[in-house]
Image (cartoon, rainbow, N blue to C red; front, side, top):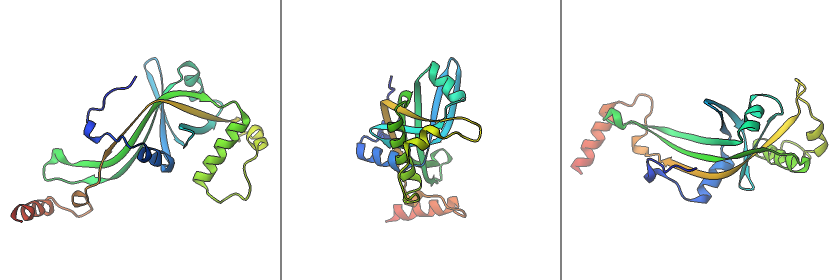
Length: 191
């Protein structure tokens, strides 16, 4: 189910912009829900094949929740600065955000999981390793706690994006005072 955006003027429709943002942002948050209890975790992720992928332990709360309710919400945002204004209610934040609603699933094919983890390594530590990740490493690895690694895929059912653009003239900086903005407004009116 998708809901209309309250501030539709801030909605972003350009798929290239959304894709670039998902490809380059480092941290996202996956929201799970069961009955009346939400659960949100931060993750490193990649956007590839028009899906969100992340990795984690094969044990724990997220696994229990996703087995009972595979519907999730994934959110990514980036703050670009605080915007000052002489009217306190108009102080705002410049940002870009994306919400991905969809179904989560565990990748069971070792070849696909290895490929996704290689994409993650290429994103987070480009050029660091001198050879590609091996399927054997992925299938045999166990954490210090004894857990296998799982690769999870979120297949989107709906994606929305919003932006409140950065307005350089309104950007707050330490030491900026309301009188600075008032002087700018008066000067603009006089011109």
